[in-house]
Image (cartoon, rainbow, N blue to C red):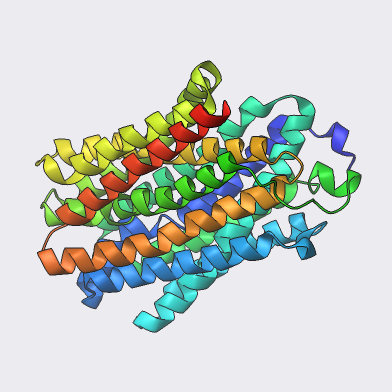
Length: 388
């Protein structure tokens, strides 16, 4: 099918569904299922952190691989492997109760998520740019919120039906398989550049790009503590099982709205400014999750976490593409790799700190400080280079 005949909305919708499966469900359904797994399997916070970090290690490995020239011209099949692999690996999670098996499966699931994110973004962003509809990137990234909202509904249904933790993974597998079929039909072509250009040149030696990559890596550490343990924090505060799903649903719905709000802020005030402010808002949410008791703290955290982290992730990738316009796939891959390093360290540090101190307060405080550092790096990159 000729590229010109395909509506940009179709690519954006395909991107949204792919992100819902590969990230919103494939990655983040672990968060609402985690407390049940910890209780029924007797896992500690550090065990949970190791499983999460294995996922992010796979994410990092695949992101580094995605930067290689071998992937040129193979973006679409690799993206489809990522979405389809998410379904298969979710099903495998329901077939074991072994810690090391969980880690191995989640490692491969992390690889699937990174392949999906890098190659699907390369395809969708290129076609949207060609059509002059870059604002539809918000629809693409809103898929993470859709997936998280769906995973919250799944976890809530499990509570109402008194289902075991395995039911959540089976549900994730079925939903991801349906998403694979939708993406296969909605995204018929590879990236624009694959048919019109040769190999991408090396990344430019840009101080601004280096600052953004460092900031993005720290961002991976800062956001992931709350993103991984938010529902466990709710359970530790005895908010009730159904309230856990409500908090996660609010997180997902906030993501859907945030992608449009922060894109407008970036257009008005500049991308680096929006990115930096988003980090500070998120830091407040991280602190609120442990500093404010009752129902208010988790809900504030859900709104501020969901209202920032996906939108800021998207803005960061847009900045990188702007700073490395001739090498968009390499820029996306390097940013994703840096993010992956932060994600690997975050759950490990948070899990052990939580086990040592008996609460999630210290891990959250460290995460908030890291997010403040991220904001400064982005602001400094924009101030020194004039990057918007």
